[in-house]
Length: 170
Image (cartoon, rainbow, N blue to C red; front, side, top):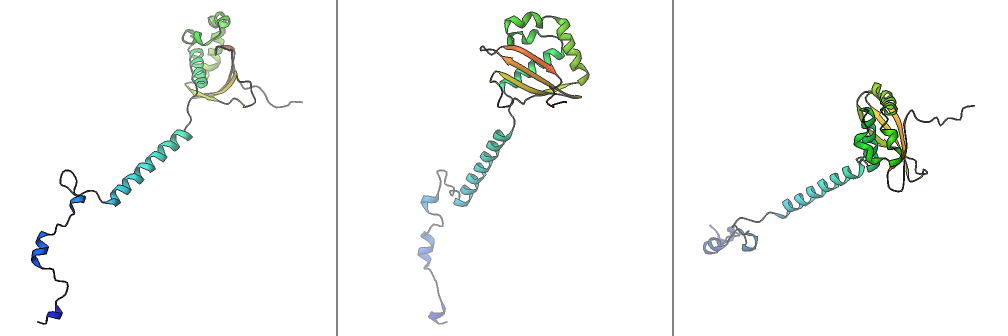
């Protein structure tokens, strides 16, 4: 054997003392630290999850306080019991709300529509800030609801029924 045939030979003593893992790469428990590729994948996955949650929050419809009020009033009318929502109305209108005949007529209007599903605000941007309009969705159809708030945030005028006609009839 010719000495020129042997290449890249490491002396045995040097191979025994060399460590395959540098001391800087060893964690506190004596285990090798995570490779940089795994760390990058975790950061990218966290960013993707954050973007998905943020997108859902921005694009998903959130009920406003006005829609919650419209829901509560519609449910009370449907049950023909305004007691749970009396505090949402101006004190001047409370006697009218306690008139079970008047509320009963509205309740009879909603009863054939089935289960109440929810309100969606459809107030045009050009409307008075105290006026709010809604589409009330039921299992068997929809109704229009509109209310006006006073300076204290109490309902002073209220309407529920068919949408007002917007066509210019001759």
